[in-house]
Image (cartoon, rainbow over all chains, first blue to last red; front, side):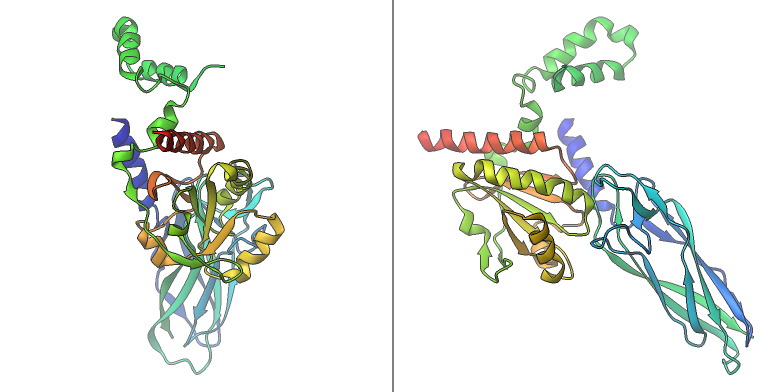
Length: 149
Length: 198
């Protein structure tokens, strides 16, 4: 019985590699010469946190969202306010995101952007931990469908 | 202070309905747990595999901070604490001072700590950290291929205790208590000493 519990525990530990879920973003309507804001909704598995975009320690890997925005321009990423969380493994509180959170990005739509649908792709880099272990840093694609009008 | 066994027995008794188990619960629990609780290192005994169940630790050839090649097989004859870690891993940093202490205390008894950093940024990230923390044991730079040899290191810290014959005696994924490590190291050093005397 104890052996089974140990094996189950180990299996669970190795299965916890995908702890961050990115919700599909609704289609973005982008009008020429205007600014539009896209919101990426993220959900982190309970018990885990990711470092914020401004981590407390130079060794920690920040969460970062970057975009290949074409046909839109000048993406300005706005991160939520991080929480300062005390963990068992750190003397000082860490600047983290946990639970559900949203990252907003403001795009400019140029006057000469071709009308019609397009897909722009963001790259989200993050590194997650819980109280006992950390997962390796990961970069995932964040696709966004845009309709230029 | 209650021992780990006492606490475990209490927990076992609380799991079931107390009415039915009030009389037979403790008897059954004691009967089931007596072999495991026959000494204070019961949890250590559970974590350290029996010699017949140990598998060979895969060998590797990695470089340390000075560029010197390091093979795990170089450590044959020693008990090795092989720790996969990274500078961005908070729980790993709790363990590092313990490992430094173990290295200091047990090195004369045929024990060594070997760290394998999984930092993607390589020595650029690791070297300053080792210098800053005055890490007194050897650290090599790892990668996915060495991680795959050990079943794929997907969480850090992951630590293997390897016996003097180069076989994996125990595996720990995630932060483990210092006491557990101390118990396991002591047990491996002692059992290997006994084997040498036979």
